[in-house]
Length: 487
Image (tube, rainbow, N blue to C red; front, side, top):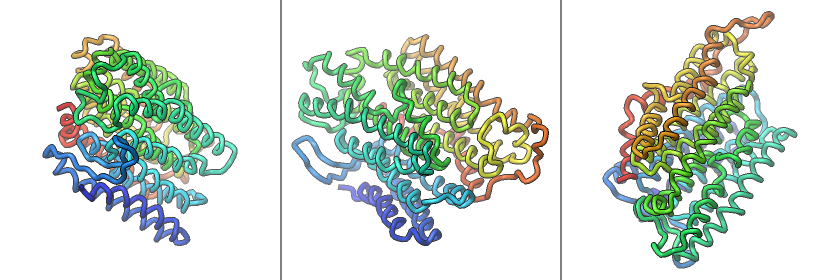
């Protein structure tokens, strides 16, 4: 048993307890969060050499029933999400300090504690060895992020939080839990398969039943943002910007798409999905979400709302790529967990910095702001290029692999969806940067008093943006894990 897995799980849990116990002192409270995030990143990083050599790390915790355990596992796919979650927690912790202090937000102890607890759940999902363990941590993420969504404790916050918790817990109970029980009854295990080919279903099983279970699993992980179970995500934008960044880049939605793709590949497997023709229909189904969410994003003037619908669209790239069932498609989908994470957290960090510096929420109010906030809007423009899929930023690697994957799968329709979505991405992102740098300030709204956000916010923005560029120029480090998944 490898105790590094347990240590990685315990670090954010200890951080939660430490923040709650020493919340009266903001320096100690934030120091605990900062040190814990760095320690987690170091522990996760220490597993990289072993996994890159082809080893799989295990830690068994409890046995509930034969074939039903609470156990941890670090393999190539685990590391994709674990590296993203631990890295972005480190950046987000420092950004949150500047944001929360600048706006003098209330309940900062609760905020930091729930933030750490959400990372605990996300790391648990990343390192889950089976569907049962993953389900437990998936639910932990849902519950502990509710106070973050409802943080402002006003009517808008409570409404957003209520929609958030109802959507996520109801879909999990109505679809995922029954599917998990039936999978256990049919197979006698909930352990993930050792590779993505075989899955865990015996060849003589009822095909209609497997298709039903597949559909239940896709809808059960509603954090993946697939329409029509996406409404919770824009509603959660009432939360403070660091929470939005957590939801969209670090924990919640990434938990959703990671769980969905993990089940597609390691419970059903590519051979079963090919045999039952599950892959391509799934790709077209989520393709509707890609296009529809992008069209809705075009209509949003509120910056965070536009970013929210962008996330709904971008998440489906991940599922679409895996559903193509070609090596480049799967690789493009899985690498987008990383690429979208760093780019989208940059965009939300920029939105928060704009609000702190100018108290502007709407795109129509941001004309000319780029001339007084060049670093913020410059980073926003670069991260936007990643979402569009332009080189040399990280999103280009995603689009390139997805396009090749669709060609190898002989799916002209998916190819057209990808091209159309790229044009829509440019249509709702490019005008923001253009207006910021070349637009004229409205009459009576001078630049006086508007400048860059505090360095504690600006530095994390620049770091996240820089990593997005480096992932586009030097993609091979993360691609090693992705290629190991496809064998």
